[in-house]
Amino acid sequence: MRLLLDTHVVLWWLAGDRRLSAAARGAIVGGGEILVSAASVWEMAIKAGLGRLELPKDLGGFLSEQLRVNGFEVLPVGLRHAAVRDLPRHHPDPFDRLLVAQARVEGAALVTQDAKLRAYEVACVG
Image (cartoon, rainbow, N blue to C red; front, side, top):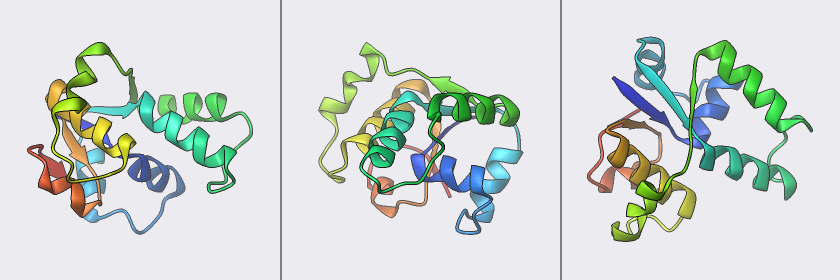
């Protein structure tokens, strides 16, 4: 199974945060292809730059190491993901809408705890 992790899921996984549901943990541990969007990395960098998220100064190096250790793959944002344009406005956050578009285009289930994303036609875990 292909899974695309929502940004908060990546952060919670790396921190061992108990807010991550048992279903999400099970899906991630269960194997398959685990994807982290480049858009999530951008979102983390932007929030860290605004002081809304505390992350290591060398975010790229930190994430590269964590993704390698956890066996996660980076999903680049590509032209095919412009399908975000056609999504209904169930959710106002552009990063979340891009993740939905990527999950749909890539045939991946979106691992998220964001209930608003369930309004989209995308498989969700969490």
